[in-house]
Length: 398
Image (cartoon, rainbow, N blue to C red; front, side, top):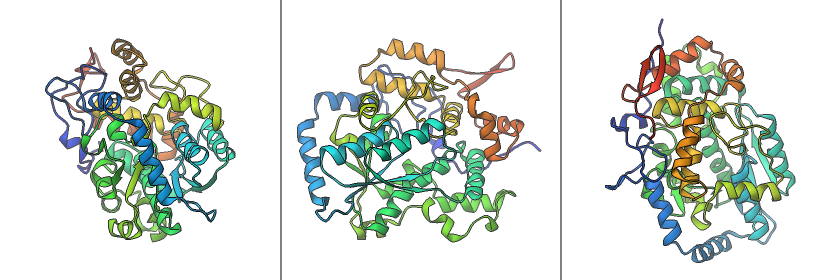
């Protein structure tokens, strides 16, 4: 029987059917929640121009110090939570908060689906740089089934990690009475998304379902799986297994004085490349020994064997892959020109992540045939066409 998916992925329903590429960087209007102005410039480029020309970063740093002083403790207890993979971005935030601003951060980690060797080495190196860490590794059998559900019905097996990555830190903040939770960058601002919260220091929890959870709650996702997937049943989990997949209620967070996700990128100008240089010096971070599949760099999203398929499926769904994300940011940062970004995309964009393909199939317990059935079900007709038996984008970047 041919694979047929449901219709629960909400964000894809709002993607325009006419493809437009930003005139300044290398992103298109197929990115969820992105805004293009009348000049054909994306919200990411507009935000970068604003940061470069209008933001008073010295004043922003004073705001940061004031915020930290409100939460700083003198009894030796943790006063801020930093969700941390040990990568260049979370390592940068944790190290700055501790060693520059004198905070006492507790780093918390939602375990990757399957650690890479370099990912675990960087995770341990960051701890060794002077941090206490709480690592949560969820029910493995249940998570594998959830990952398969997310792959089939959301076009992203990695979504099950996103659920825990956002929910677990706030569950721990609530349990431990820590009111401040600091993430690295505001993705909507830095990678071109909804500008509503681009210039705000934190994102309230009311927005998480729309912006992070693809428009549906974890319970809605689970209920769909229980009703429609024969590989998932209530025997696979207990209620305690579900706790860290969904954030505390808005009411509980508000009562505890936890405002939402605070972004370090609001207070300090954000540069992934500079974060990499910082962490190689301060947290023992090491890049991949070889180029990461799908892009040209060696230092981004290294910790999970499933990362490459997150970006590859995004390329299938939206025509936006891993190389684009990095090149667009570097164009905006002035590290490369748009022409150089286009050249990099023509060379690396959409490259299949074959290194961990066998691991991916085994983790989800699926065949290669089923993998391609699911992948092809996500190819939008306005983006893809077949030429001589091969898929190609109808509107590649120029």
